[in-house]
Every structure is written in structure tokens, then in C-alpha cells.
Image (tube, rainbow, N blue to C red; front, side, top):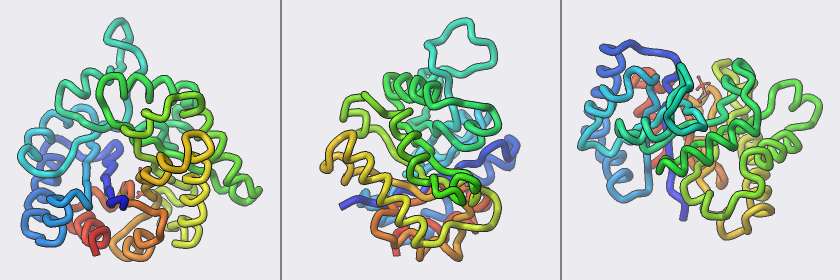
Length: 261
Ligand code: 13P
């Protein structure tokens, strides 16, 4: 039985003080909520925050002793060396990250990241001991052209093709339709379920059904307290990757509640 995993992607938001305050209010809110606490204690629920690089170490301190996990939003594929401005996976591990988000659509589409780069980063991150949240998702034009499934299959093959099945043990997939990110237009529960089921089927093609059945597949894209319950109750939706609503504990905690409801 797969549990649920809800992670907050803070993107390029907060400052030092507000990031610390957000982490603290999340930890306090979880402590005060019996259902969320029980979910986290039993392993049926995982949660994480992914702050910007400069605040990772401070947030690591703020969540210490809680069940909130720490993730970064990107890393570089090379070992430490002459790569000005980049951050190595081993550095993230060193300051307390267990997770790293890779292949986010904002990096694919705004920074021009390719599947080959994402694959190299994924391999490097796992080699450094990080678990990877790999983001996939189609644009509106691709959906309208009925290319959703072929885009997802291409992104899966591009990032994971040829890698050993053990790769899945330290991997979470996030299905994030680009048209739903930050738009207030979420995928319908049926659209999310259809895409998640396709992703699982495609993972099974690469890695076998047993490994695919164990995979946590998060939904991301305008996930809120209002729509979380219905979306997260779909059989192949195993949690969420939350942007906007992760920036306010009052909005993020109800999504955790929906995940354990
Ligand atoms: P929003 O929840 O703001 O739509 O962002 C989703 C996302 O991109 C999470 O990685």
C-alpha cells in the first residue's frame, strides 16, 4: 500500500526571516494536528519543504526533530569543482537535504533544461545519496494536440531510460501539467488520474509492474485546500507537489489533512 507524500516547492520565494517563520509555523501546525502527526508517525504520510538554496541550512535547523523533510529545487550534475554558480548534490546532502526536485517545468521551459541534463542530474543526485522528485508534464499546446501521453513517455524515457530498476527506490515522480502550474486551473481529478495511470503503466514498461506499483506519483498544479481531497483520493495520485499554497502554513496544512483523510 502506497502512502501519500505532499511536498512544498517554495520556488524563488521567501526571505530568510519569512522562510524560517514558514517552516516554524508548519512544524507547529503539524504538532497540533493529531491526524497529520499520526500519518507522519506511521509512515502513511511524508511531507517535505523545498526552500531556495540560501535558506536551506536555516530551514534545516527550524525543522530539526520534526518529520518534515528537506529538499532542494535543483542541483548540478558534476562533482564539486570549477562550475561557478552551481551547487553539487553532495553539498545539498552535506547541509541536511534528503531530497532534490529535478526537471521542474520552470527549469525545462525557462532555463532550457533538457532530458539529458535532467538524467545526468538525477544520476548524480542519487549517487550523492539524495532522493529525487522528478517532474514531468505537458504544455497546454501539447495537451490540445493530444500529445500528453507521448510527451510523458518521452520525458520518462529521457530521464530514466536504461537506468537500473534500483533507481526507482530513491525516486518520486511529480506529474505537473504546465498549464495548471500557478494558473489557478488545476487538472480535474479525472485528468490527473488518467495521466498518473499512464505514467505508472509506462514505468512498468521500463522497470516491471512490481516496481511501478510501488512508485509515489505526486500531482502538482494549482493544488489547494479546496481541491486536494478529491484529487488526492484518485487511486494513482499519491500526494502532491505544491507551489503557491505551500507558502502559507494555513494553506499547506489542510492539504496534509486531505492526504490523511
Ligand atoms: P502551484 O501549486 O503554484 O500551481 O505550483 C505547482 C508547482 O509547480 C510545484 O512544483
